[in-house]
Length: 131
Image 1 (tube, one colour):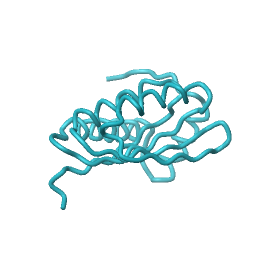
Image 2 (tube, rainbow, N blue to C red):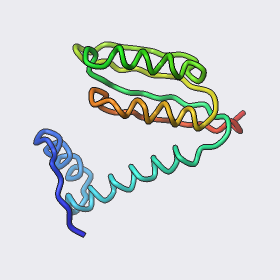
Image 3 (spheres, rainbow, N blue to C red):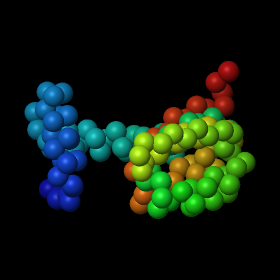
Image 4 (cartoon, rainbow, N blue to C red):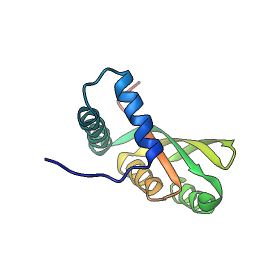
């Protein structure tokens, strides 16, 4: 199936450099692999059940979103056990350490991804069965 995408030039250039450096044979193959990784990551988050521990790392443009992010952190205060925040000019990176029901942690991830000023949200989930 053919499709088209609107991608900023600098992102496409960096993507092309990456797949070529990895020795893949085409941009299409690289996009298929990236899409599979995205789907697998989503499936892993969706399949988490029960009590979990998780680390969320996200970066965002500070001024447009900081008040909203603080509101979300307070809203999910029952699962966020600690946060860490660093500045890089107008951008910030934050980590949120979470523990609680998988559905609440999932809800937090999706709320963070709702904001245009949040560039990425990376998630590592550990099931409660880890001792």
